[in-house]
Image (tube, rainbow over all chains, first blue to last red; front, side, top):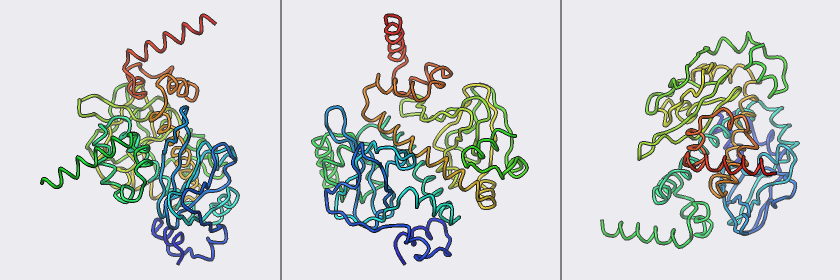
Length: 195
Length: 195
């Protein structure tokens, strides 16, 4: 069974939907490390589901620095949802951080599968329910938490990210300078070695 | 027609669902200004839809200060979604900022209406889609934007909040001290008078 169909079955606890029903609405695409899937200020036409690899979503700030807001690993969805739904230009760039294989769906096909399969309505309702709940935690973390606590919490929730992300990108996501992140890691590995 | 039914019809563009189908799953509750709807660290049993009034969701930080993360005006939903879905204790307090009338639903009834009415699946999928997209904008704003720009953007997106919220609560939400917010407002009204 395809990983997307597996994910739909796992999230909805519904075994009735199969590859045949879902996959024709998607196109499989493979990107190399550093490839751009979506450019900032260009029409946002596709919604991506990650089969393998890792994406990041970022924007370029007043100073020309790239500010990362989200990552997507296997089984995560990524697009500028506002732009995708409204047909507007994307406020963000989406880039592959590793060789990444995705399933891509157009806004039109997204409408069609939602209307055709009640289980897909449930699936996306559950996906967004989780994403929205997680985003509240994120706001809580970045707005108030001391930097080292934020790093610890992020590490405990998403250990995979810590291992797979480039230092510079991870630092930007956490709101750290790369130097601060490197210092924090040194301190922690020292603490570990001493204990 | 009840405001909740109106909202469901408006969001889903579906006119088939009526008061009779929906309302039996909810209980109407009215709270006075400053009443607590949900306590931090207590079981999270209810999900609230605001008919009139205003709610805020906050937590108490290490220093004992109340940090506001969300507001809900008319037609907004509010709960600790993670806790509500899992049956865990709430990580947040929910409080009425004005006299507030809500429709409250239990986790059990939430499951039942989602399973019984496909239009309710669509409704919540659309509600979360918007909420999740808005939360991305929020993360972008609070993590990177100069304070005065954040205030301007928030004011242009949610003018109602600026008029209705107590200064202290608004300042905490924006990550300002009340003094900084008051200064910002003085500067802006001066600028307006001069132009």
